[in-house]
Image (cartoon, rainbow, N blue to C red; front, side):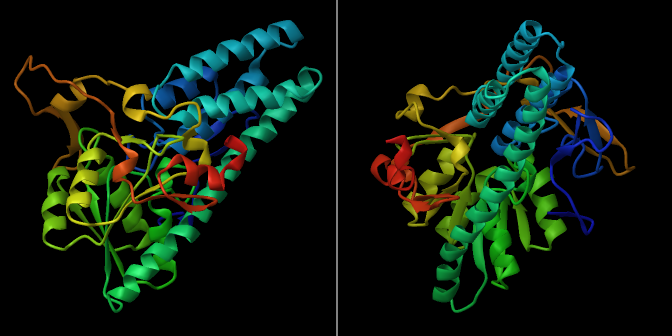
Amino acid sequence: MKVHGKPYRTIWPHPEQTGAAQIIDQRQLPHRFVVEDLASVADFATAIRDMHVRGAGLIGATAGFGMSCAAITAPDSEEAFARYIAEAATALCQTRPTASNLAWAVIRMQAAMAEAEGVAAKRQRACAEACAIADEDADFCRRIGEHGLAIIKTISEKKGGQPVNILTHCNAGWLAFVDYGSATAPVYAAHAAGIPIHVWVDETRPWLQGAKLTAWELGQEGVAHTLIADNTGGHLMQHGMVDLVIVGTDRTTRAGDVANKIGTYLKALAARDNGIPFYVALPSSTFDWSIRDGVRDIPIEERSGEEVCFISGKTALGDEQRVAIAPEGCRAVNFGFDVTPARLVSGLISERGIMRAAEEDILRLYPEQA
């Protein structure tokens, strides 16, 4: 997608340093656009853990490039190389627990290297596979947009060409993937097709990914949008101001339960109560085929309570500051995600098409997982 009119991805191979990569440091947005170099496994692990990068697809792609970096920097002897790769895989997988794309990418990278003979060949294969993961993520998101476009087009026709009002939560945009995004991919496809659309953007406390990231990227693409407080969505739905909800997901079970940013479950309940379609967009790398019960089995990341008690922003003087918004010493709990049961999901939009959030229909599009 575009930044000030120039095409960008969220991660790409470093043009001058083999094994390194460059990312958009998302902690700096929307006030500063900063490109950061990642040149060691520790750099990649820190970027994932401390949310220089975030979002299921981008976490996976970053882990892929992290494993490629490990292959380049590992010792030359085969035994030491294997030990170094295993240690890197463990370090990367321990950074964040909820997004299934992370372990999926690490395992895929290990499998690719295992197919090559000799350290030199393993290094070459690792670099190629990391780029393949990134390219695949972008392509899958583009295809999600194509499938989701049909849903928006149908609503637009029913409204006689009046703007389609779409509510989204957190950032499942191109900043959360390598390009296009998942929840935003149908939005961008509709915008490109000339369909009038408007997006309600949840602020998404405590990290404010909606306010800082989704609003920023929609603005860069010229998509009409309005920022709202997280608790506004239900009111809008009650008053007929939302036609469609589309969110992303960090892990989805084979039965269709969906883990997404904390607060998603409440939006799904409000959508069901008001008869509004609630869709979840995801590339297949986000499925966790090993589990069925998301509420019971999906690990939910609990982050520092400081993220709730403090907030960062730009002052009237133009400098950026972090300020306290709660009483000193206040205890806060900070769950990063919640699980929306499949019964509340109208459908899943993946690169292979649209399916019901039910195991038999998911397996219709992914029969190899039966």
